[in-house]
Image (cartoon, rainbow, N blue to C red; front, side, top):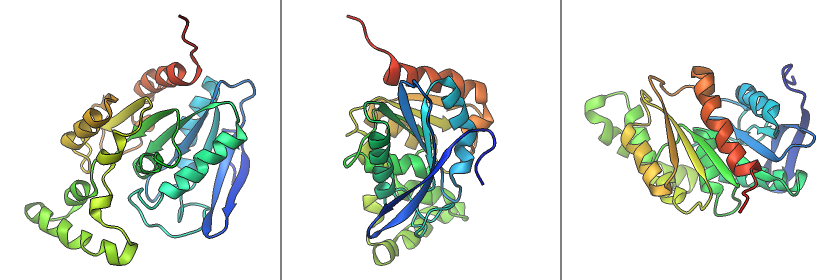
Length: 250
């Protein structure tokens, strides 16, 4: 079902040997840029509608997509963003084609944020808003482990299965190693009480990318737009205006 609050066109990206990716496109006539939004693990494009509506009303065309194995898209959930980098690359390429001449921003939450970062060597955006991004899979897996005293051991056991099951290992899944190679403006959004991404990880990402960072005080691993709409609006809207639409005058 299409969202009632945002007039969109349904699209499906098809490619031989790759899952079909389902998305919604809202074309804002006269817009100065396009924003692509990707959701977190276990969610889908519908979760990004409120933020997309804000950005559409601000003056941007927007695209929302389901990653592989989520929502209406084909494929399996493989997680972590490393496998989904192919999805993000295809979606950004489609945005460039659909809105030729536009600058394109990538707005991703958790899994979606990681997918954009890992996709950057293949297909980059002109600006990034990355919400609840982890630094390394090992660190965030340890924080998710149920027994606090044995978190490192549990993470090691769980992650040891990855190469056999997925074809890549935890050593590959380090956004902190990729984010510093993105030579585009980056805005990091993080919850100060996120149980899965601690302050150390977030600061490591900030330092690696020389990125702007906004803390949402008291927020756990939740939708930060829903947690504090005004703070989100106050920081994200000016960031996108500066990096997508503003023309510098010498």
